Image (tube, rainbow, N blue to C red; front, side, top):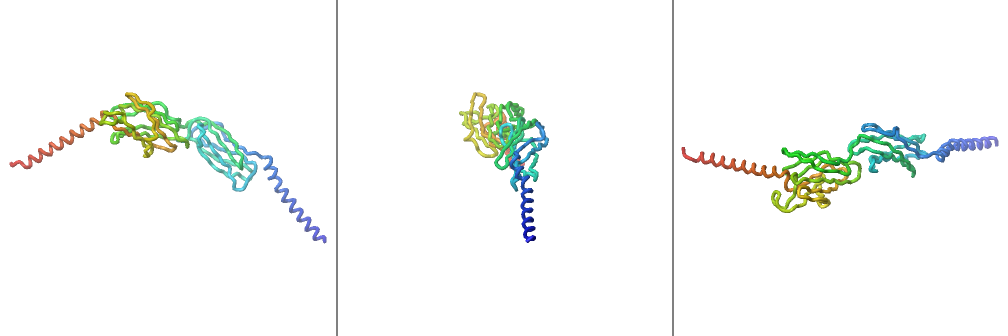
Length: 280
């Protein structure tokens, strides 16, 4: 009978021991809260940002979701990290390049239905391009007014073969934007007739090779300029505006030079042929 009594005591002791081991976790779950913080309040391009915090209770294989939003409230990056056994978590992010812009960023942590957030300031990124861009071609210089709402314009080049402008862009974040550009008619134009004759015609616009002409609005037209509003999706790299003439002097002169060159070749060929067939 004493053996049975000892066995009962042993079972009770095991139950108590298990309750003691569970008790700290229960208290931690009730008292803890989700937190998030960054290691500094401001950063510059190239610096690493450490995001850390604590969770109210460690749930097996349940990660903390980290979202970083840029000053436009566009998601810059997202990450997931499993908390440590003690309830702490940590991860790192970098801000810069085509997705990074100056301003206040928001870091949001979400875990088991709870969300908290903090902020930091970033300087040294790229701001949206506004103002004028210098375009040079065959000794001609044009100041083109342009702005891109979701990124920056890196260059504008003339493609005389296709009578077009090639605009290289870098977009920021995941939001679509708009390219507003004022085109000097002396630089590029689209007409229904040959050269600069006829009425205004619509430009053909390609974004990364896809025709978006139907979505383009011509918001202003004068005798010297035409302004277009072009949709630019996130991730786009190139916008091409195709007209019927670019830098008109080039098109006319090139045609005249080509015609003269062909004519000269034909004349010389005929003279050589005549010299060969004439008797000596």
